[in-house]
Image (cartoon, rainbow, N blue to C red):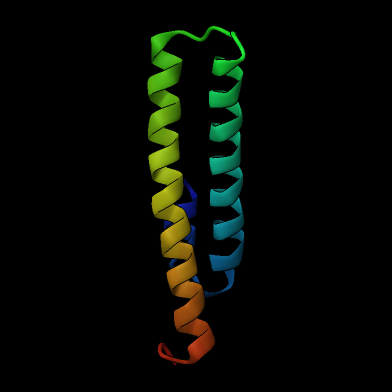
Length: 75
């Protein structure tokens, strides 16, 4: 969730994108663990789905701001 507001700060859009990427990877790892037979409660699975959605939004915002700053559109 922190990747979303950090994406709109000039020098923090790259760390925000990295945090979002890590959150997506952890979510994918958790889903892989479920397929392997590991059991998690419904509340944890809902929280994981919400985390994945927020990570995707934060990643898109981070990449968008990164591109805008790199092209000079916001100068």
